[in-house]
Amino acid sequence: MFSFYNYYYRRKKFLSENRDKDFVYIKTDSRVLLSCPHGVEQTRLGKSKYPEIGALAVALELAERLNTNLIAKTSNHFDDVNFDEKSPYKNKIKKELENFDYIIDIHGLSAKRDIDINLGTNFGQNVVSDEKLFQKLARGLRNAGFTVAVDNPFAGTDRTIAGTFAGNAWTVQIEINSGITNLKSQHKKLELLLNVLESWLKQLD
Image 1 (cartoon, one colour):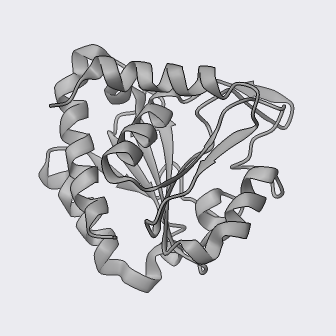
Image 2 (spheres, helix red, strand yellow):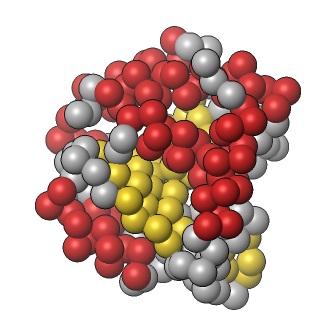
């Protein structure tokens, strides 16, 4: 049974234990990599951006349920590893690429957005090797009642994690409305979302 308490405090414990590291990489036998580059504050072009705390909580929850590989930023070094063309974070993914068939990059949307989920595919380029797999993801989310946009407002283009490694792996950028991921009052909707994503991810391994 889903516990919002465990979901919430797993993230806090993870960051507390790894606050002296730039990022954490956890390797398993899975062919899936879950990535969360924005779970801590970022600095893009000199401007600070809020941490996407719900995105990190979701990534950690799914990684624990499915025993997938995980990479997550754990401290801000005045960088944005999803935007910067070069970074130790991207270098680590590049080094481990032979171990992955799929890279799922998880982000957070502002609660002010009028959609639940944005799926970034770089206008189809990142998922072209298996379009049916992407359609299953989008259809599963919509059938569960979530409002889903594709490549709008974020498309997972070339310099992002998803865009950088597309071609080496099947990639998608999943942006989740923080109104779902951050609020205990929305725990039932969050639990539904986690179950849909878990069911879809199980198909990949």
